[in-house]
Image (cartoon, one colour):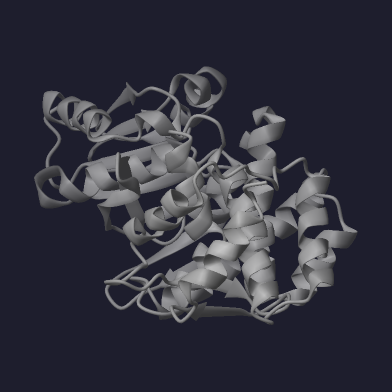
Length: 345
């Protein structure tokens, strides 16, 4: 299965199938972490032909998504004497993909990179669309660039070694896609467990097709692409508060979706019944749906560090029932505070 991403200044394919052979007439560097390399590095290297190939292994985890790690990647590239025709290969989950893409975007003012995502979350979302970046103390992905890969290779085989929590984190992003864009897909997810090769392949394909459509019409998130951040406005605050160590990204997004749903119910965009259906589906994969807010005012103020917020207005992505979404910055503070207080008891 091939899904094409067509953008104003670039085009690339997302290959969903057994990993194909990658032939490069240049030097290449694989960026990975100890967990992924331990399971799959030999398998990957057997599918790559390049003038020279080397591997840089960086620490595993969201807390290492920092400028210090980017400098580690860049130093390896300089030591290997990469030039502007060289290629970086992201081999791991969303953290690896984001950092590899960002490093590629700034090395000698920009070189090509390839995405080979190994987690469900990165296969259905993070590897497609060209968002790259790192975190800092102010928030998530506040430093970065839009830098599209030259190709994405999604091999479901890599999911065979994925821990249950990581799988659930990916399912949260799949549910996100369905709630925002397709009620029929949501109903299919509610009726079909993603514990077999056939069903997971269908879910990956549908998610990538949805992401491809959205990115093709709004590459740099000036409009509809912001809808893909449903659950993220709240989830990013949760990740920041817990120093990126308590929840996986998809888990934080799952909680954020529940919070966004509460706000949508409060202003009449969603029924309580639909909000419960989403929560039940998340819970069925053991995705967290509760979070205790210690300081409501502080949590609220963190929203202003979100990239989607502008000046003194917070942009919320809220579901309209199941299958549609609304982007708004017209919700008053008292309403938001009231919803947040419901998570502080």
